[in-house]
Length: 69
Image (tube, rainbow, N blue to C red):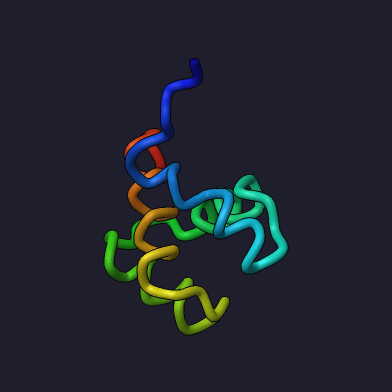
């Protein structure tokens, strides 16, 4: 039996379906935001890329947890 995905990654299928871009695209976008704090990155995804708050927050949390800056 497959273990259920938990945490920020649980949002990934919905993010890909809603915005039409793979998660790798969003990780690249976040990777270019050097020196930004968590909520600054969320705000940019919301304002410049029109992501919802929950989706933006999940992407940023995952990015930072994987060692992104």
